[in-house]
Length: 605
Image (cartoon, rainbow, N blue to C red):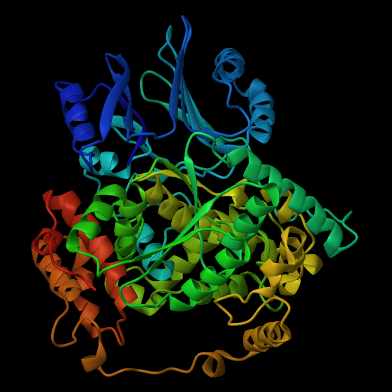
């Protein structure tokens, strides 16, 4: 994965550490056009950047500081001006420390983009690093006995440190499809928090401070109507599109049949900006409804729509995704890599509607949460990949410990209202650990642009009162401000439009479903073992590969429980892919090889 890498050796086992580190950096290359460039070296530290063509990165240097900027800051495009601002911030923070954090927070509030910034004070070797308030670029941090490492590249930490799997992080991943809090899948490798500042001493000591926290209890009650809120958001959204629309690259929109990407299409049309649309038909033809609606949307706004048909993914697609994200983007998403490779032929900015479904509609449950236990139950049910009993079977972690850990994560949030703790979870865990990792996968191919995550738009939308967001009222009004046609064309996920009376019935059914007892809402259906995807005959390549991995990892404690996977009833294809993702990451870490190589040129469906 491209991005910044900082490695500080703490002085133990130091002989040859630089050569080992440089080799680990070279081993992270996933394509021929991948470069690793050294930016700064001292006796016990190394700063480098891994780059792909057109990856957003810039470097500034004077006698005092080396400054590197990864990502895009859309409203600060003049490099000289940006350099002077960052020098001023770095000088203040290095000299006065936490007393000057308010200056950094003010700068973060002004900077509109997705970024990671690192500064080196040449005289002392101290470094400071901070990221944007939403943590749009996933960053991983390790503080160990021998090394302190901060990197955008999870494969670097895997190769350099050979960490053991983290049982609790793994349990959370299997329960919901992503890890929670700071945990990743690996012991001692944490997510660097969004909107945070880290100061690294030359001896490897590091202090991390949250600079830009969010509290979703804060609501702007000055909005008197849905129309007034939609007016303000419409203006902010158009500005987000203007800032992000590239004059140097071809602007492409990933257009689906949902509500989010159509807002970008309509806004570009309203602004007179030409954007081409791309979409795909997957090999299983599961997205045909999306494609038909995308065709209607493109026709309504006279936009070009390029439809790309995908074959069944090959093993090499999964291998590439594994080496990029080490399981943090689950491997079934490998099917989309041929789509990216096809459109990468052009120098482009790739617009997506990511974030719209988290920012504009209500994220509150369809009923009142009676207490903290009810909130935990709601999260575990709505995000479920495996039940807690299944997770215990696979990992040995008891359900009460998983619930305790989830409660610890929720308690770390500043909100008082349980419903808003849920909002925080869905933004910084579900989006931050699942969706942002997916966008990071995209960045391996081109510049990924997500206008909904513009900070002014995000902060304004998240403060709109719940009564205005409920039942898609604000989302509908927002789309209508752009163009009534966006609201009139059906949502592929529903089969009807925001104008349709069936929307009220859908919301009513969801409220009824919320209050129904579990045994009515989710009847227990046990499918006989012969229908278990892992045990199906003839065996699929996925199940064959998974069994090979278990054989290769025999004796690895954390993976031992996976051998009981065929006893789970039932085991779906999605669940098997989650197990495959974890086993593949551990196998690559432990052995340096992957059983997926046996299927490199075979179709895996």
